[in-house]
Image (cartoon, rainbow, N blue to C red; front, side):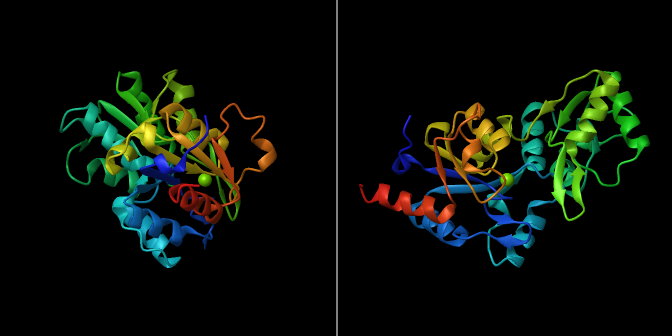
Length: 269
Ligand SMILES: [Mg+2]
């Protein structure tokens, strides 16, 4: 199906490789957000990174010169919080392996109760202070019947030191030790996309996912029924698109090229 940009009312942007790369803002970000504001197009930035709170992401973007309110930022931690609230009753005891982002999303408003001894739910995200003891506690609870939720299953993420173990590595540890598969919230599963659409008031038919990865962003857009644009400012090269099981609707070099095409579509040509 051809992508008609003039029908799009909501946009979800991946962050790393679309909005910034490392500590550098990518071209066209500011112009794209201004365009969405002017056109009344709802938008959010979505990321599998569960370590930071939305406020911490807001500060990171502010340092790069982008004023994006935290309400426009949805991480897999937040999406996990939304999903868990919609699925489990208030005061459900929860055991979390994770950092600020995930802890705040679950415990920040007191909806869930932190409980190491008898949790009904074990929630796992990336945790750079994780210990055998913490993993053991999670595994034993799951063996006793607690539900297992993963913020995401990214096995590794890039850093200046090289590829670091991600949430998916911890999830794999627990899965291996319990023989239980988690419910996964982040990309490429559809839950985070659904949460982001709900926050923006969008629906799948008129929502566009803009991302740089085929196996998470484009696969996730496909699973959630969204339209998709791949930008080449991140990890994917144009020639990889042809062999992907989840090809995007359209490929652009970057956000400036997408914006130019979008303006033209709205002008009727
Ligand atoms: Mg990315």
